[in-house]
Length: 254
Image (cartoon, rainbow, N blue to C red; front, side, top):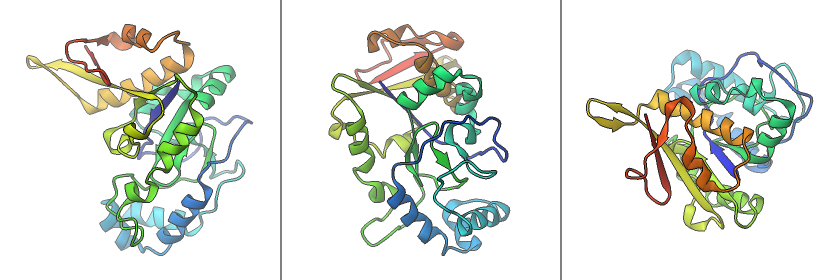
């Protein structure tokens, strides 16, 4: 089984925890190519491109100007799963996983990234800001990051996945769009979390993000004999709703 998760905009300024084991992101050539172009952008352009404040633009301009491909743990280079600080990562709570569970996460969990493509939990990363949905014409052949990454991420998942495996897509729509399900050699299931509000079930983004991280943690900690066992998931009072679900989109409500 492979688990997909989105990155988070919010990053820890100081790593909450570090472990001795680490790995190197796989798309070194592509990441370096993107950074070489980002280094040329002034803060005013970053504001326009990323819709961020002037302070964030200055910070990221500094980050890219001093960026190097991460190859060792330093004061500014952390393992990816301990760097992101969004709601999904609060649900995942990677800092409380045991060594054995972190090793399982390293095998199963893949974090999609606009800059790094795909990150394993213990992959080293230099802090950055580049959302997959950024409307940035990377080159004449790549009108945006989806075009830049093309089939690379899907092909990588195919190489990593064994026959009969299932991908559980807990990434946001923005990031999941970078994967092409029809070109995958394995099935992909997308859990969707909804809350009962004003007489109907709705997706409340803060809760949904937390639930994605919580389900990722559950899948890391529990070996499922069959993907159908995921329909029994009941963390935080969520229950699988067969009537709202489809073959590839499984809806959990509370």
